[in-house]
Image (tube, rainbow, N blue to C red):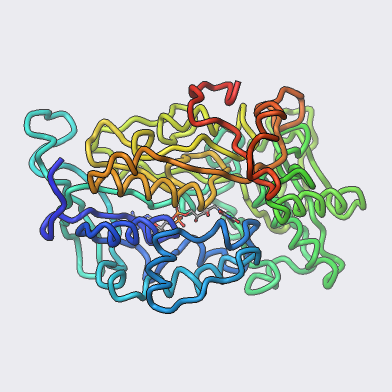
Amino acid sequence: MIQPSASHPVAVIGAGPVGLAALAHLIEHGLPAILLEAGPGIARSYEDFRHVRLFSPWRFNLDAAATRLLQGRGWQAPDGEGLPSAGEVIDDYLAPLAALPDMAARIRFRTRVAAISRRGTDRVKSAGRDDAPFVLHVRTDVGTGIIQASAVIDASGTWTQPNPLGADGLPAPGEAELAAHIRYGMPDILGADRHRYAGRSVLVVGGGHSAAGNLLTLAELARHAPTTRIAWAIRGTAPARALGGGAADGLPARGAIGAALRELLDAGRIRLVADFRISALDRDDGQITIHPEDPLTPSITAIDEIICATGARPDLTMLRELRTTFDPTLESSAALGPLIDPNVHSCGTVRPHGHRELAHPEPGLFIVGAKSYGRAPTFLMATGYEQVRSVVAALAGDLDAADAVRLILPETGVCSTDTDGDSGDNCCPPVALQAKAPERNTGAARCCEPSSTPTRACCR
Ligand SMILES: Cc1cc2nc3c(=O)[nH]c(=O)nc-3n(C[C@H](O)[C@H](O)[C@H](O)COP(=O)(O)OP(=O)(O)OC[C@H]3O[C@@H](n4cnc5c(N)ncnc54)[C@H](O)[C@@H]3O)c2cc1C
């Protein structure tokens, strides 16, 4: 790998919480760096759901290097126990961080990385490869440009690549045609999008926290607009993941989401349609019918609007000319896949990991942040902050610091090997291990010990 220099800085892709933290660490280490952001401002994912209240309190949401840079300029950290909205994370933390002169001078907005390669060599050619700088082809308002870099930290997230409605992972027939009635992610149900849902028949699809958040907000809307009807379709037989661990969740706000949802289901304010795998959609008499794969299952009829909250997937196209390895199930970093696979692992924690697990066969390339988790739904900012601390220490040549990875995450309190609730097998550590963790009193515990061997069976 070539050394970072003014002509070949470390290139960070994406000005989300993790990309900005990476830049803060690079500045602290004195490494030449540039951050390329596709949008017109920082944190486009958080901007998209700025109305959503996060479930992790401030103390989990701040990166250490970013905090040091900010405090050097007189910034006051918010109360660590406070629960910010995504918008408050932008306004009270990320925006002041990005505005620091050292940071602002290195960020380029409206600069979308379209593709990355090595100068003068394609994916196949090996000779001289490691000494060739990266070339990043970028699209800006004035056309296409090329930026050369010594290393690449890809923190471009997954939010803009939502999973489709089709149960097979492909857009269901009719999905594109009915796009005007489908929103992906977390629309602003009580704010800008209120008119779209008030008094309508709304179907939420998905079994995770985003679906749960949408359902709670729709129920709140229905209190003011009582003719609003809410249905919820999941593929599994029971909504274990969305209902969460309740009081056992290390993040009380995340546990409270599931508890409130359970109350709404019990009260009959939300109609749950379980074991429903969408195969097609069509429109009849102005309303949408959703057809299941199983012909014996009744279709869901008379729906006005659909909110698809089925997760997201990474966009790997920009990496096509680089040598990469991904987990075949999740498209996550290969070493992380066995630890975060939702097929077998639901406790929401992950073994501490850093530059070694996040590296690819292409020296100098690291994929971090939500993108490092691929399709797994349990990524937390705190994980990304430790990732970039380790990666930047490695780029700075401080391997002792890079290898000293520490990560204590709050558990979800849902620890079965089958999130649909069919199995009682436990993927979390024995109780004795959790009890020994000093952070247990704060609700934090480590699911997978640093020394554990990654297997599909999580901590076992
Ligand atoms: C609804 C929701 C609630 C969440 N709540 C919490 C919570 O309470 N606590 C918690 O810790 N985590 C939470 N998360 C998880 C995590 O914090 C987010 O997923 C976070 O956005 C991940 O940060 P990131 O920096 O990796 O990616 P992102 O925030 O997605 O940032 C990626 C950035 O890269 C830019 N970009 C994308 N492609 C390109 C390109 N080709 N070129 C240049 N720029 C590009 C995007 O515009 C964007 O600004 C939540 C996630 C969601 C979706």
